[in-house]
Length: 135
Figure 1 (tube, rainbow, N blue to C red):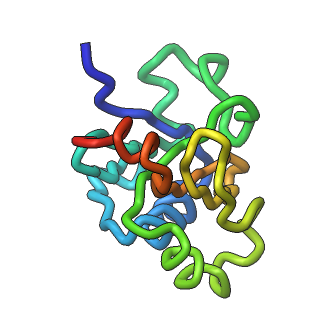
Figure 2 (cartoon, one colour):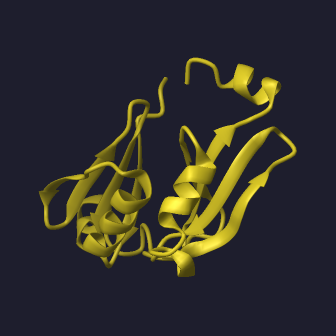
């Protein structure tokens, strides 16, 4: 079994897509006004409008902008450099500036427009680098 995709249900599809395109430097594929995907080499982050909930049983299945238990993580080559590129334009989204975590990653923590936490990280200790080798 492989984790292929994570989907964010949102009332503000374009705003969220624009945020993630800016943060990652990747371009999302917009299939419809209600659905888009941002593909990385290892997984896809999908965006669905609240209107797509009708295909899954209605509005009671999920609620936009209600997550407080998950962090979406992107490995980047140099988190400090990424921070310097994003600091001015995403100042209000920064939760924590680059910090070395006890498990060996340097992490930049952001909050997207829907309130989801987003972690950009770079492994910096030998153990963290080894653990993520090949990913």
